[in-house]
Structures are given as C-alpha cells and as structure tokens.
Length: 170
Image 1 (cartoon, rainbow, N blue to C red):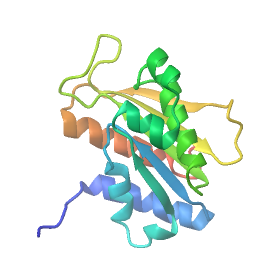
Image 2 (image 1 turned 30 degrees about the horizontal axis):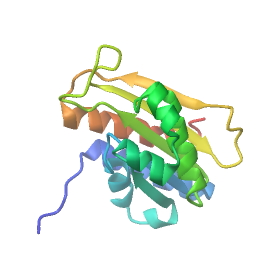
Image 3 (image 1 turned 45 degrees about the vertical axis):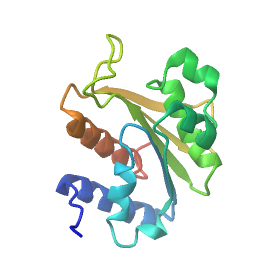
Image 4 (image 1 turned 90 degrees about the vertical axis):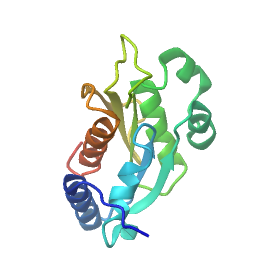
C-alpha cells in the first residue's frame, strides 16, 4: 500500500498547530465540510498529535451537519451551508460534542460545480469557537480563493483553518 503524501506546506502548518497547542495545553477539534477531513489528516500526520487533536467531524451533507453538530435546519435554510451562521454553528457543535478547548469549522464551495453568483467556486467560510467563550462573540471569516481547482481550494482552506487553530490566532 502506498503512503499518502500531503503537500509540505500543509504538514508544516499542522506541525506548528500541534506544537503550539501542546505547549499551551489545549485540545482541538475540527468540523470540516469542503475540506473533507484534510485538516484532520494533516494534523494526524504529525507524531504526538494525539496529545492535541480531540475530534474531527466531516459533515459534508446538510443532514450530517444537523445530526452530528446540531446545526439548525432553519439556519441552513435561511443562510445556506456556505455562510458565517452555519460555520459558527458547526464550530459550536464541535465544541459541544467533544472535550476540545477550541474548534474550527470550514464550509465552502470547492468546485468545479456548486457555485453561484453570490457564492462562486472558491468561496470558503471559517469559524473558530473556544470553550468558555461568549457564544455571541462570533469569530468567523469568509474568504474567496478563486477557482483554483478543487484540490487548490481545499488546500488553501485547510491552510487557513490550521492558522485559526494557533493559540494566538484570536
């Protein structure tokens, strides 16, 4: 069986996240949609990641977002899966369903299809939630990477998510 090779910049970013969170004594969780587990895969590539990574949720469908992370159907219907409201709900759900100290959620349009005028291919939304943080204090960002191809959008989204998992990213 051949070894999975992740891009070096992704592995380097994951290494920084594991080392920084280990030093801070923090456990992390990820709630992934368009990245399909790429962030969790990068983190688990690093020896010692088990000291830091608490959980990874791949909730690709809206149904999975609702069942696994308790994202409201009303929020999905009102704002759409690629929205700050849904990303924030995903991050909150990952915290609620794990013992993590911080969670990051990623949802977006990797392409080649699925985009719209308001949310073209390459649109990705991120949210970060911390245990004990004020749920009304939404930490989220919407990025447009452009149509880099499916793999390119997923890679850029994973790199951004990893940056948000650094202890000083607040």
